[in-house]
Image (cartoon, rainbow, N blue to C red; front, side, top):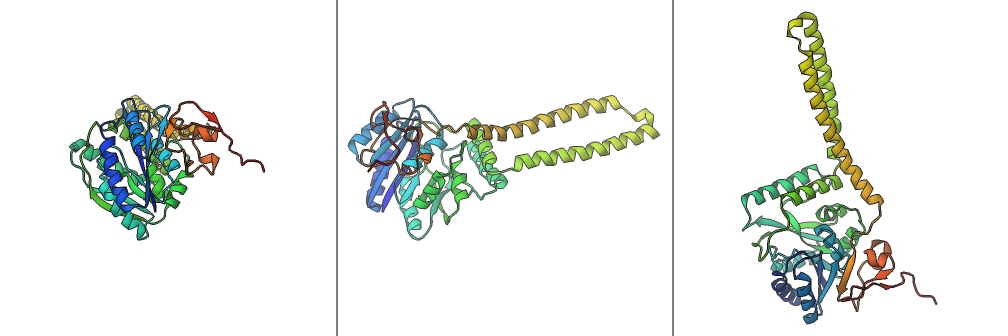
Length: 348
């Protein structure tokens, strides 16, 4: 059994060495073979240099480094694209998710589960506001989404090979990996665990990023906002008709009480605000459609290492590859210069 561990990295220089040591100990004891795939998402600290050092000392380490910061969800996607294990574990680099939970995931997987997602019992070291925002985020997404996305779960999970291949076929952008994993189905089980405090550095998910992720997740897995605007428009129309009827009656039987100018001004401001909200919601969906129509690659690789003896797992289908291979270019390991390669089979 081969285990792949995918680790998105953005400015996590202080966490990478202890994370590597802990994953190595777990993988060596519970897998026949393993690989650690670090995806450097355009880090501006020394993260890439540390990853290169780990690669030199450990042949199980492989890495992909982006040409710029493409975001956590895209970095996770790149790791899945390149993972070749029978079981693939997603884990963040901040050491809040303990690698020592992986053996329990493997036990569930060997017992028949296709996805084992880690569900948090405790979140030590986080502020009350952070816990409250996370609580509301998961329950709002689950309430509005048309798929069942487990609450209190991050990206920390184990996926069977079939699940990884199914997720890799989904190339929409913006992306919400947790939603995609739920959408593909298969047998999914929760594994309760206690989260640790961040080992070093600061969280990369502030309120603004959390709100943006919420909007992308809702738009990607639910039509509720569009339906809500439709319902709101219908309700306003009905209320307007009723109020108009009341005003007509008052004008006929109590002219002194009629104040048409004030009512007209309030109605204009109210309907104008509703119209702007409706346009914003529709515009968000249209923006997603526009982004998809551009057919841009999800990410661009600047440099990589550890692939001398293997191609990325999705390389059999050029449509699923990153920019370099899909365009007929491959970045050699430990190099920033692209080299042309053919995506066609050799001639007889």
